[in-house]
Length: 498
Image (cartoon, rainbow, N blue to C red):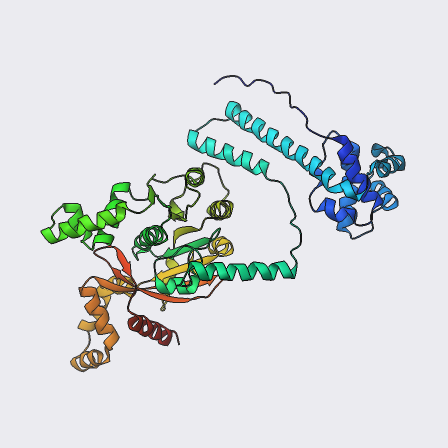
């Protein structure tokens, strides 16, 4: 490892601009509102010690809702025991004289802010170099990703937007409504989920929003997220990226081929296909090839990998429509955390920031905790999310999957034993109590088709509710049920919950 060279930092500051900003706050009653809305004491060059102390005193006065002028600022400096270090009240008079009036205040604020941003940027570069020379690099990709994030964070500037008047707000809403009405006949204002009732509830995946899809293992969350990724790309004709942290690319390709061709996955894996299945597979592969779906199958990918690759794809395809990550539990971090909960908080927060930064919706798949299995009613609720507090807080939409057959399969042995211990009268009574819905469910299971409920448990900007889907298990394909079947399923679910 080469020895780190000493770096002489190049200061970037404009003392006169700082003095003009401070003087305006001392001379003009409401100037501090504009200044403190864009600057903080950290934006003052550290070696301009007097300016920094005066700014901190003014910040304290504003925090305490006290008037700001030469007299009150002098008093605050006395309380802070820094009046002598500043140079006494005389320095405040010099600052007031340095003000060039309110007309130039915005320009002076920008000058101070620009120099502050440049200093932060240069410091970030120096820190990256210091880390390179002084810390061991276990993973080069992670180091590059963390360095990019550090520099990007340093480049951000504090900004307070101007107020928006009610007239302009009304015009924005009107324009938005007209745009949406012209662009979509099915009330999808974002990227389609691929499923009619989910679109009705959510209006699609929205730009800059984080959607959580959660279920117990083997319920079908990976299959549904794959179906959503494909349908979003195909129907919206936009690029979609699917990060798979568990399966390799070939397996994903086989699953997608089975779902689109309705050829059993087992037949595709073994290659034992009938002529009819070969024709269907060819058609399904053609459909798959025509979409703009990108797969990243890096096992246990790091958070920085996902962020960096998403940014790269977005730079190449600014119309990137959706990012799907399967799944949260497999995302790794090279950074050490005090607990798993803190790590999840950091990871989910970073993924939400990625969605907002790129203005691209993100679908993040995760598992539900085992506690849902211990309840008589096994339909999941938001508190069943692992580390639920942080996920609930950051997510804009939360979808929870439930499949009756998942628990029926688990309870088959117990039910058989219970049935064997019944007398003949009890068996006849049980048989009579089996509803038409249960009979239909068993018929569906025999055909490899099972009903699945997707509960929109949280929707920050829309409705909540149940979206029934049909899961063709041997194909890994989800489809919309008929309208009549959907309504019947919803009625049955509601009656069970009463």
